[in-house]
Amino acid sequence: MRKSIAVLLISMMIVICTACARVPDEGADSSISLTSNTIFESTSDTASGKEASEAPSENSAAVKTTSTGREMAGISASNLDSGNEITAFPEKKSSSVLPEIEVTKQIVNLNHEGSEVFNGDYYKIVLKEKDAKAYPELDGAIRYACEGISEEVENAMISSAPYIADNGYEEPTYTHNAELFITRADRKAVSFCISCDSYLGGAHPYHYFNSFNFDTKTGEEILSDAVVKDMDACTEAIVSEIFKEEEFKDVDRQALVDSVRENVSLSSLPFGLGEDALTVYLSDYWLGSYALGWHVVKLPYDEYADLFNEEYIRTDEDMDLTAQVSYQPQEEKRHDISEYLTEDFGYTPHEDELFIVENPGWKRYVSGGAHSGGYETTLTKVSEESYLYAEDWLTSYNMSIPVLGRYAYGYTYIPYPEYPATQITLRDEEGNDKTFDFSQFVTAPDINYSDPFSDMTDEYIHYALEDGGVLYVNIGHSTYAGAAPSTGYMIAVDMDDGSVLWMSDPQVANGKSFAKIYDNIVCGYGFTDEPDYIYILDAGDGHTVNRMSVKTAPSYFTLLGSYLYVACYDTGYVFRYQ
Image (cartoon, rainbow, N blue to C red):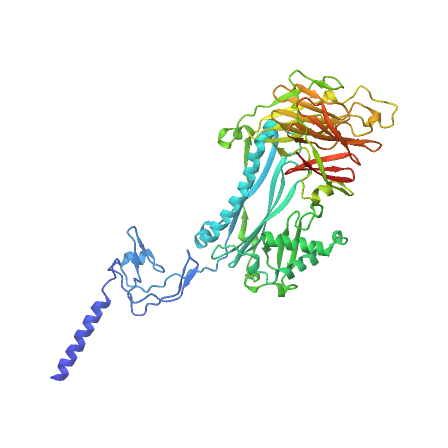
């Protein structure tokens, strides 16, 4: 009897357990059952790149369907629809696929009156769609980096438009061109460099590099200190590689080391991760002067093994840039300069004026609108020093050297770039120009053509200064007065109509600058075998108030506080003025 009861209980438990095993999970199709020999393989999360190596827990849904259709890794739709009992083998996905990159070169052109005045290019770099999903952080980092480069080019083009519109266009064409180098793209890192050549006016173009190194999984930037163990040793290695080239044999090695080290401390080391070497990109001025140019240096990993951390210098054996990087057809956009001459781009039409300054004669002149200020500035000598060059003496006091082409009193002074400089433009903060032409003052009537220096008597603008709507200019030639005595004038011009308010006596101002102190102009005249004086003129009518003798010809006049610094040919004076 007891044996019969035990058998009965065991049978009931088997029935109950079998029924429980066949209860479907919530949301699962009741026609699908899992047999006892179901196997779970490790799967990969393609969005995160993290491999899920553990089997699902007992209460997880081994089979799932969606509201729009049934989906199950390793189970075909026909099996789901048939209701047959099957064994599930989830599809094994791998995160080991190398990221594939698409590159598109973007070209932009700016035209003005039928001529190309600007051309530039940049690169659009993206991961292919499947890899962008697998590595979203990396894709975002690359896109953001490329946006910064494209903005550089677009801004260069847009900023050049109003300048060309206002000042006209002269060759060469403005450029901002780029070249792309991808040195690595694998499971650990993606590394590329954009080399830029930029010319937006001036004496020469500028070459620089933008290098980018990203961790493939996280998208975070890889900095040089994560790759290089000892930056000082790396700097020495860089210079050693440079000195293998013949052109550097006469360059001071320590100067190169110091220059590279200083630039690294300011902006980190620009580098690229390669398969066999670390590439270092040195822009213009990284090695010192512009004449030394830019440079690309390779540091082989095997030769400089002690320099590097191994985490980022090991690459995948199957890395193949020719397969991973595809170049799309380039895209070109053409623009006309008129597109950017609108208020949306901060442009307002300029009111430019040109005044031809009429020469009232080659003697002292005072117009009816000129009035003496009646004030005399007194100069008390504080010090006198001998030196070799006027510029060096000024800079020893941390004084800037007064030159045309600087910003002062609300205007930017733009001298005519050719000799003799007969025009000067004053540009206000809104970009409006007033140009004054002094071409009537170039050729004096008393040139002594028998003098050996008579061919050096073209007069030109030495310096200019605006104050209270009056433009003060000193004009003269740069040789002996005996070759043409009518030289070295101070001239005051009304900036409203370009008329001459007054003209000083000749031979009072042939220096490279002058200063305005209260109601006086302080200037100077002198030459090798001629008397050398500092002159104090009345700023209201130009008459000579006072003068004082100095050892050699006055050249620069600079104010600092209540002191006047006068740099003569080989002597420097400091005066207290009041």
